[in-house]
Image (cartoon, one colour):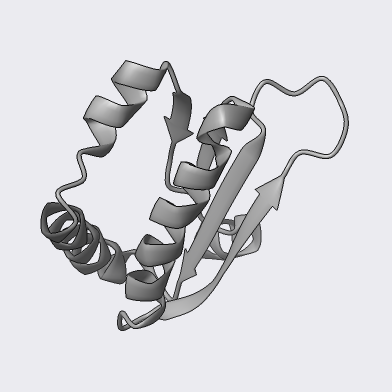
Amino acid sequence: MSETSINSSCRRRHARNFSATREVLRKRPGFVRDSILEQSSGPGEFNFVTIVEWENGDFFEGARQAVAALHRKMNFDPHELITRLGIRVDIANYKRVERAMAAE
């Protein structure tokens, strides 16, 4: 899951870059579903939330490598863009609570 705070001038570029990334992720083994949510109200700091669900964590590394390869092919450096435009990002991996509780 990633939470992103971007200003309106970056919105189109963010959407374009994620569209290409989303296409790659959807073709990866273990992909279940994804969602992009845009904040519509409230005081939250982040205005976009991206969620990608995998069958399990074993598929994540292959997906990460596929996205890195796509970014190289696009000559796109997300870290440079984040720094240059002052975009705030919070990225983390989560697991379903009910699965975590069942494993305890």
